[in-house]
Amino acid sequence: MKIVVLLGLCLITTAQLFAQTEADMCVLITDPCCDASWSTWDYSVPAGRQITGTYVHYEGSDLNEVTVECWQMVNGLPSIRRWSVTDRCGCGTVSTTTGHPIGQNTDLRFTVKCMGCNSENCAIGSTAVYLYTSINAATCPTQCPKD
Image 1 (cartoon, rainbow, N blue to C red):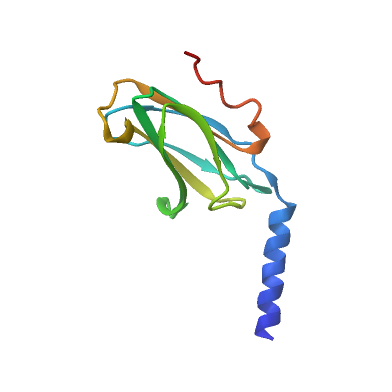
Image 2: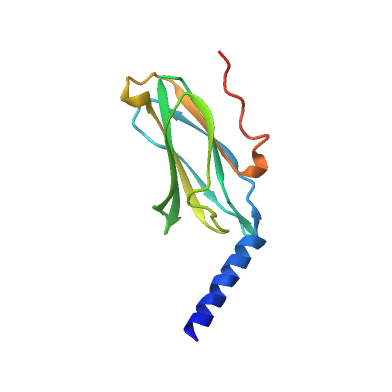
């Protein structure tokens, strides 16, 4: 009987996730480089929405790298790291589905830190990081600067 109840709960949870639509998330976080501090942005996944994958577009100096983390907030504190993207030097776009889907009413904290690329000297300036969902893939990030 317990197995039937647990199986039923799993099916209901799965059906709820499939019934949700992708969250409309698009944000820019600019982190000052070389200061050893994290820049943060908090986001709550709206009711009836989910995040099935997160795109990270980063624009910075070739001398600097960026680390981006997504934390699930529990009781107002970052408690569960859902995913991280590390050691991204310069400029580019990467997507992650690790730690997804992230369901409705989940509070998240995105953190960004810019430091010297490959443990080299850090160049003063800042790095822009766009975080977005597939709904915003064509419009959220800007294009990387061309040399």
